[in-house]
Amino acid sequence: MDFSRRIETTLEAAMDRASGRDAPPKLAAAMRHALFPGGARVRPQLSLAVAAACGDDCPELSDAAAAAIEMIHCASLVHDDLPCFDDADVRRGKPSVHIAFSQPIAVLVGDALIVHAFEVLAREGHFQPGRLAALVGALARATGVPNGICAGQGWESEEKIDLSSYHQAKTGALFVAATTMGALAAGAEPAPWTELGARIGEAFQVADDLRDALLTEEELGKPVGQDEMHQRPNAVTALGVEGAVASLHDILGGAVASIPDCPGRAALVKIVQMQAKRLVPGQFAQSAA
Amino acid sequence: MDFSRRIETTLEAAMDRASGRDAPPKLAAAMRHALFPGGARVRPQLSLAVAAACGDDCPELSDAAAAAIEMIHCASLVHDDLPCFDDADVRRGKPSVHIAFSQPIAVLVGDALIVHAFEVLAREGHFQPGRLAALVGALARATGVPNGICAGQGWESEEKIDLSSYHQAKTGALFVAATTMGALAAGAEPAPWTELGARIGEAFQVADDLRDALLTEEELGKPVGQDEMHQRPNAVTALGVEGAVASLHDILGGAVASIPDCPGRAALVKIVQMQAKRLVPGQFAQSAA
Image (tube, rainbow over all chains, first blue to last red):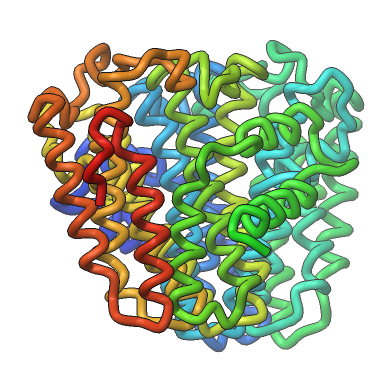
């Protein structure tokens, strides 16, 4: 089964468990709205690619790790879109959860998706108890405080902010979780995979800043100019468009170079290069890593 | 160390990890605001009491389970108080998190406390891998959808609602987690402990309804009459005050009767009876279970 099908199947199964007769219908429907159809599923794709590079001896656990990461990502999008944060009406080209349902439902969808990320891990970790604690710990670190997504978002409420720490927590942490949890699910050491995740996360943030500056709302599927409106730190503001593109190429080159020597290295390099091409805006893509 | 000190020490250690130089200061302070000083810590007290009744052979893991349950409880209070839900300005006699800090911070505090509940479990579960999956699964079920707190809160957005399912999910589930996770942390079978948790949860809900109907905002430390204002189901509305008190006594009697035969049974019965006395409003307390 290819990575995409593995990801969608695992997410579908998790949502089937969260639906059914017992569940409040609107909340269950809103959880699906937040998860499907997905975006590029970049983080779970990366996680499965690393698991494959490490031998993927327990595919169900790799799938669980990948799905858990995507659920956390989607939870963060739902909460980020709330009126008290970005107040974004559109996400992935359709109404955001609080618009399609309501604010209370959107708060609960985020909460429930966070919970179900850990539920999915526990369910498969039951059969690989020796790997579970590290997986839960890695996901919690990537999501919580002081270094995870919540912390990243929390920095937006501070007057003084360090651009690099902010991006590392808000975007980088979940990419680091993607690579390290892919390794952990396959029984490999996570540390050699940290840099790959950190660099891809950094590249992704710069690419996001470029898209926010260069694309229209229609092309992007969500409101543009959000960073400027909310006076948030942004690589394009700091470096200019050309400078941000140059930085993106450097970062992606470093990402590929950081991939540890392992049996699946060549295949993983191809996947990272393919993902990298998608990150660089069209007119600057010629020399993407 | 007594239960209270074990609970506070474990929560303090978790918050120390979530604070420090790297953390956004407001978010870290708001997490503490949500956790300290606590209320009666009924759920973690119950969890430790069950662990003790089951032998408590791994106290650090019992402490982690108890702290995780309390963190989920506090997270649910912070999100419930938000303007889009109860819009409550006061909690435990002080400003609720969104009043003391801001709405964005309150959303993030809830998210982060959910995450850290699992982090605390994983940290100690590392040393007891055979018990971790069941603990994470039990906590996730009590918190998520279809049967946990999120689902319970989700029912408030539905037009048709089943009073018993609603209370079971919104209040009962976390009490069931308290008893079953206490057992699991001590290496015991969780199933015999389900009924005790369910009955105490039911009693707690009825007691909450009575307090909401009988006490003043000053006595309660939060706004009263919320159920009536939000047209939420309530045992006093359904049964009257005398009927709700009678129901509370029945439920508590059943709770004590359900405690499984185990070495620590007598001590646990005393603890449950002591907690029960606190639940029944003063003027009706004479014959509390």
